Image 1: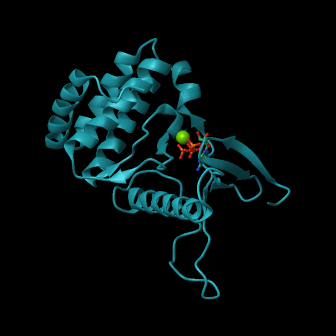
Image 2: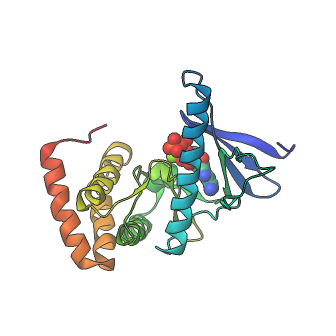
Length: 219
Ligand SMILES: Nc1ncnc2c1ncn2[C@@H]1O[C@H](COP(=O)(O)OP(=O)(O)OP(=O)(O)O)[C@@H](O)[C@H]1O
Ligand SMILES: [Mg+2]
């Protein structure tokens, strides 16, 4: 850590440090005492690797706005030992976290932002990238662009069901945190989602109805 580095968030799985001088974030997977040390290392390592891969895929394949990964996985061993890499170093996206700011935006801006988020989500899904934790806490608005962060629960899947669950999650997040006009916000999201790939949208939105009728995936 350098003197310009400070802890900005601590979740169940990771600590996040902001380096203000270099404008970078370090997301470090923390050790869990209840796991066997070998297993603990392997879990932290594989989750770190997975998150980096998804962030990179989201940027390169889906061409969406995500933070640039700075410590790319080169797969090299150091001194012939396996590299202990438990952190994602990435660009700091300095902007509005939507969970904090969306409610205060004017209707027009809310509409623009939600449509953009819907379109970006559709692009992820076209590339079979499932975010896994699509909420307004994982979206940042910077210079009128919506950035999606936190691919810690993400995975690759071609299944319509998995894509529908992503939509279900954002819908629930809107209902919980932005209840004043969550229906409007979700309609705008949906409009953006449909604008990118109509046939995918038709299938996924159809499946969403089924997911909801089953009442699963509730937090
Ligand atoms: N690249 C970034 N730029 C700006 N802020 C970030 C960035 N990455 C993370 N943050 C901030 O740190 C918070 C926590 O990060 P993140 O969502 O990745 O982890 P988490 O939710 O604690 O972990 P996980 O869901 O993987 O267990 C975010 O809500 C956001 O405020
Ligand atoms: Mg998060």
